[in-house]
Amino acid sequence: MKTTTSIKTTARTAGFLYLLQIPLGVFGIVYVPQALIVIGDPGKTVSNILANEFIFRLSIVSAILCALVTIATAVYIYRVLKSINKQQARWIVIFTIIVAPITILNELNNVAVLLLLKYPEYSPAFTPGQVNNLVSIFLDIHHYGLQLAGIFFGLWLFPMGYLVLRSTYIPKIIGILLMVTCLGYLLDFLIFFLLPGFNVIISEYTWLGEVLMVLWLLIKGVNAKRFEKWQEDQKLVLPGNPFPDPA
Image (cartoon, rainbow, N blue to C red; front, side):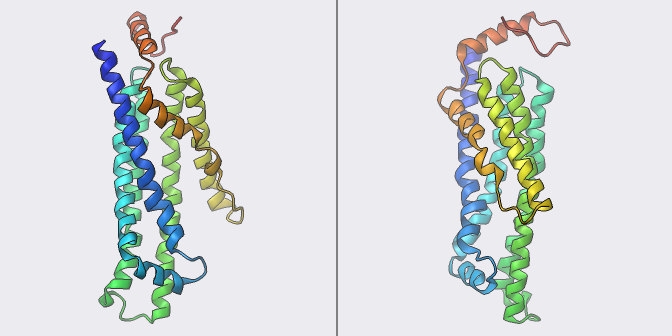
C-alpha cells in the first residue's frame, strides 16, 4: 500500500509539472513571437518589441523555465515508468537533458535582439534599417533553433509512449497517442527544413497524447490495483527478463 501511495504521488507530481510546461511553453515559444513578429516587416517588428519590452523579456524567462521544468517532468515520469524497463525509461530523461541546453542557448538570439535595440553601444556602426534587418536575422535564427529543439521535444515522447503501452497501469491508448505525437514533431522538423513551402504544422493535429497523459497523471495518477498486480508479477519474473507477462 505504501508503494502504491508513493507511485500515485509521484505520478501526480509528474502531471503537475507536465501541466506547468503548457503555459510556459505556449507563452514563451508560441504566443509572444506570434504577437510581436510581423513577417516581412522588420520595422513593425522592432516597434512591437520596443513597445512590449517586458513581455519580450518575459518570453525569454518563460522559455528557459519551460526547458528546466521539462527535465523535472521527465525525472518524475521516469520514476513512474522505470519498473517496466529502467534502461528505456532513462531515454525519457536523456532526451530532455539534450533539449534543455538547446532551448536555453537559443534564447541568446532574443537577448541579442535586446542588446541591439536597447543598448546603443552595440550598434553604432549600423543604420536603423540595418539594425532592423539584424533583429530579423536573430529572430529567424531563434525560430530555426526552436525547430531543432523540436526534434528532442518529440523524441522524449517515444520511450514514454512505448513504456506506457507496455504497462498495465496507464491506458495503452495514451501510449499509442504519445508515439503519434512524437511522429508529429519529427515530421514538423523534416517539413520545415526540406519542404519550406509546405505550410502545414503536423503537431497541431497530433497533440492529444500529451494532453491525455497530463490529465491521467493529474487525476488518476496510476491504476492502483493494476500497479500492485504489476509489482507482484515483477517478483515472479526471472532475472534478465524486464517484461513480465501479467495474466
